[in-house]
Length: 228
Image (cartoon, rainbow, N blue to C red):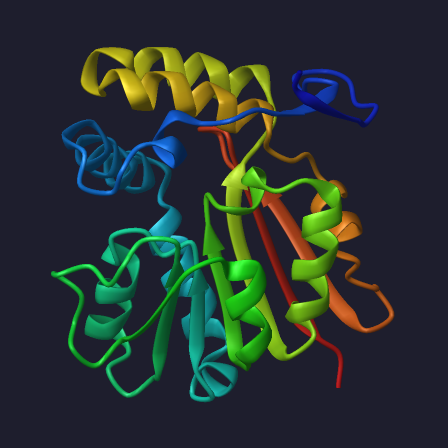
């Protein structure tokens, strides 16, 4: 049975957050369908402008970034490699279940394994995540939120839980494989609406400046930085 997290919203937003298993998480990293699906994700990120937004967030908080940028759910390392090209003096670290990608720049640190465990040993200036937090249940998000306190800035790009997102997802079906077609709709159903993620992460507005935004293509974005 899917796990339902009830949140009341109206209009173009769906009402329930539904967390269900995604096919990509169950496939070996070397499986051909998984490799193709990760390429599809890069296409989706390009269309949604997620990587561009992450680069802009780091550029805006350059003073924090010099202390290091950590990406959770770093996947094949595409975003980290882009960040290396844009900010080659910034220490970069990626966390993911899979082993170090062969294409990852040699100067980027990589921590394989369960991020719920490995994140506890890390700190830095900026913590980023792209299409990763929607995989987690509220109890896990609360734990991740506690780890956020060791960073000055957090920036997360996730699916906006909306009918609009499903519409754009259906338009992508001819261009992506079966894994991606399945997973992208599960991701949208597990995504977030404004006000939800900061609450589940436990980001106290008294200690954090919180900015949320949405995109026309169904993206949800959260950037928060600690009050000094």
